[in-house]
Image (cartoon, rainbow, N blue to C red; front, top):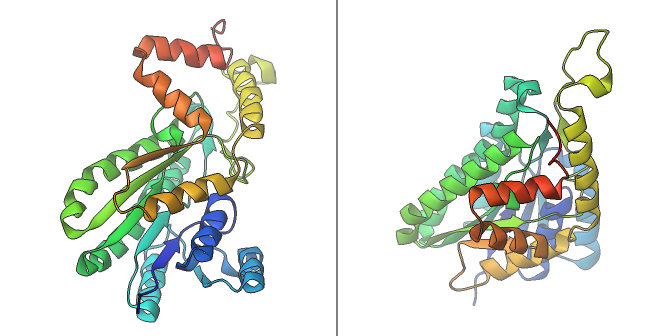
Length: 290
């Protein structure tokens, strides 16, 4: 008799996490959809799971809390005696010029986007190592390969997760553990609505809003990103890519998801730093600012 595979997905209350949890459950994985605020955020996914009779459970897990991570992973291990797949999806975007972002906000962004994923990995790696089998999927972003203005700390977390993933793949491969990076482009989800913005800098009474040093650039970036978000792929497309990767016997290390992600990565390969920088300025209409 075949053993049912067990999957854990973080940040499952909406967007990519919700769709990934449902997709894995629909394809035979006993899926633990984890989220920080279980009572508030589990209703949508559990209503779907109940209606479709899916092998899915909602579990409280706050990636910012060591105890919460350990308790959730230990509970899952007690119940199922194995963990085959982990999808590190929890995260958010913090927007603002670097001089406007406080160190507290920077640390909070790293705590969720980077250290949150590391906490989960450190909890599950011993389990997978003992099984001599497992797949860890880290949802980074096209923003883990290239960067745009006013999202520097977000990019820093995603670049960091990419670098860590690239390193540990060599450590874990001898134990049958695969590390997989999923790099979506623009996705139509609550990610954009949940974006946090740095506190506005103080200014003298003589300064108007448009006098602030970054205002003109911010307006142009904001207008461009609104258009990008409208043209983004649905979260279900990212979920399909996750499923394809984890069900492959020999998955790739990186999967760019979405035509925009694929095109940007390909363009970056064929350009010098200066050429690519100029293309970013052109895309966001920043050539004549300064």
